[in-house]
Image 1 (spheres, rainbow, N blue to C red):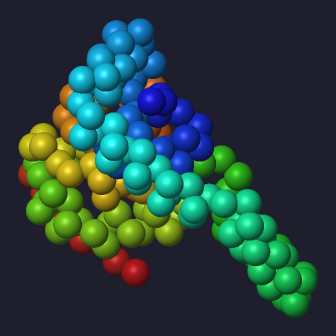
Image 2 (image 1 turned 30 degrees about the horizontal axis):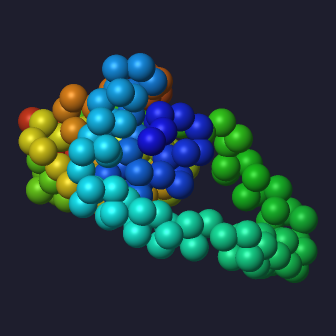
Length: 166
């Protein structure tokens, strides 16, 4: 059980390997009671936690960082500076409001663009939405989900079709 803060949403996937809650004592109590009473959920979260933990193993990330460093050492300095300019140090977040998962799928190019630009993307659905597909910077949340922060941008996609160029 954790709140939706910092890098924890990179590790804890709500309803898949843990429960992400609002930072209130009521939400914590509700989550604890739910886990105490729901043996099937406890087992599912535990099994999935092992799977996710392997993606964050020290050995895996050591190899990934080694590859990044070697790749950067092989590049020209100008190329590295160009890449740094394109990637701001401050993370940005956006909440995209949709009716349901099908409507979210219609906006996949827009979602992809925001992810490629480094945004944390929160897709809030009016209808119940499967949250197990959430991972890292892409989080599917239900209408009643409270975030512990205000997103930098909010876009209501319920009534419109958005096209993305490029």
